Image (cartoon, rainbow, N blue to C red):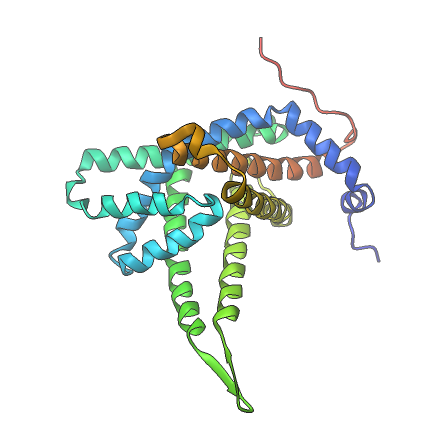
Length: 299
């Protein structure tokens, strides 16, 4: 009995053709332009979003431990720039008493901008779904705030698990007169926790953001693809920034903002590219799947 679908067989037997088809569709959908919009609004959203999450979770978890965990995992999104972001968060939380209702509402609004723009970008990638059905505007309005709550809960869970793994890393195992430290084992588990968290977040985005019901298997396929591509990209970016980059010489005091925006641009590109992989896989289920996508034009 053949358990592999015809679409999967096509991808496995023609990986190069499928990759080329995906890149052509991504270009036709103006993927880089969409990624630029997502990155710009993510830059506006990231600081108020993190401020809200830290202030809320500091009532449950020690603030220093929370910021330490946040600094560690921000490196996954913003290589070499997490310290600057966490420093600003620490300075703000020390003056949390100045937060009034107006500032709180403003931060909530800016925190949701990136999710709103990302949903619009996904509607372009999955335009075949939008043509069939549209999402109710109240669902789109509430979705960003649901994601903010889920990200806060995720950070809380990761902070607790990271604390346990750090304690484990300080222990050692003795056997037959030999002692082995668990520090390396703890480090591997922390890395795997980050990778699994990354795949989970990406999969949830692909599962929820596109209009209509998307299968979990398709969402997971896009999540794994985007996560693997981002792992390669962020290590390359970290190596470049630490060895060859002259960005500090060129941009001076604007270096942090430029590097953060560059990281977000690359991340947004791979995020949308993962969505395009899912969209093209869905197109294989329909007749004429090998027809080149129609490029978008402006009048």
